[in-house]
Length: 405
Ligand SMILES: Cc1cc2nc3c(=O)[nH]c(=O)nc-3n(C[C@H](O)[C@H](O)[C@H](O)COP(=O)(O)OP(=O)(O)OC[C@H]3O[C@@H](n4cnc5c(N)ncnc54)[C@H](O)[C@@H]3O)c2cc1C
Image (cartoon, rainbow, N blue to C red; front, side):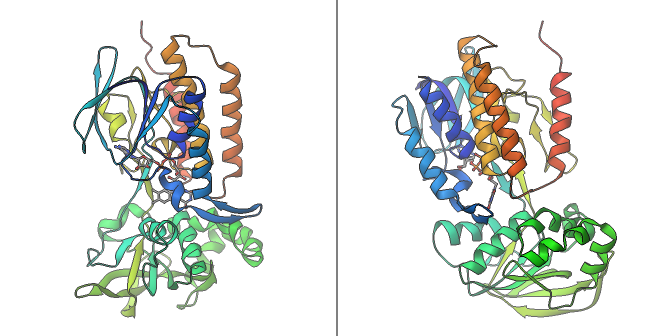
């Protein structure tokens, strides 16, 4: 099989790029390993000041627009397992089906994945990642259980707590992860508490009024360390900022969680106690899925933890591997509107590569760059503040990269 452009990933980044390529007549194949296109849009749902954001509707709109272009084809339930440079283009191999596809340009839009939190008994049925609970509730309309607990502070944990309680699920609250042992990379207890800054604007009026308090390390530490053991009501549940989950309990399925108090240094204090739950959601954060980009030989920006590894990329999603482009969460964790603008920008890179003209589509590039800035300014959730610094370093690395010839 041959195509001009291959897009790996039918999330908001991949679909937005496909629409731009489709309307410019480019023969495009979009491949996704999931049976339904839309990527992580399918599970997203939250209320902003301008009303409800329902990711599934955004995905339906993108697909309706994509359906207008007979030159764009969707191949689902197909995982791309490899990319090899061949004959000036790239050959993709699949893991579920025979055959390969040859493409002149490839856009990698493989998104992000969750980082689990290993704690004793975490393999018991009923223990899941917070994104899995989001998919069960928002995509499949299934309650993950009757009474659950969320372990780990972070934008996704707070968003999903809100979504689950709106769906009528009883939560024992949001507690800290174990901050010693194999979970040390989750940071200090202060790092966990600081994540409240990313969502305080979404809370009720009294929470928004507390923004200056949350913004100050001094006050944040005092309020969080001094919170009552039963927690602070928020997001339809309770935040329990000085309680950590230390182990799951149960025989054949999870039946409870062991909790223990922590002090302001994150040290466990006092005796552990047991609380009954029939499901638990682990929220260790999100990380990009850059493996295919790395396999092409594209220069990568590596991080000590591996959680921030991304390809070095230019203004229109170009990587240092010729004909390989990237967009969306594979470049860093941000929301869907940002991924959509990145997909549109990367389509310009693909078009220029196919035509051999590096300066065409300048007006579109300017419009999409502006859309990206606006999407960032309006983003309701900040997943990890490290990304803006990493993106700045990548901009410098791109400018200073060794040039051919
Ligand atoms: C569990 C989880 C929950 C999230 N929840 C929210 C939320 O509530 N709100 C929010 O704003 N953001 C959320 N995000 C962030 C979300 O990733 C972005 O909002 C946005 O969806 C990113 O778009 P994308 O197109 O880059 O990637 P995605 O939407 O993740 O799409 C990537 C697509 O690539 C496919 N894919 C990956 N690898 C391959 C391969 N090798 N072969 C074929 N197909 C492949 C996947 O199946 C997927 O459909 C969440 C992310 C995750 C991981």
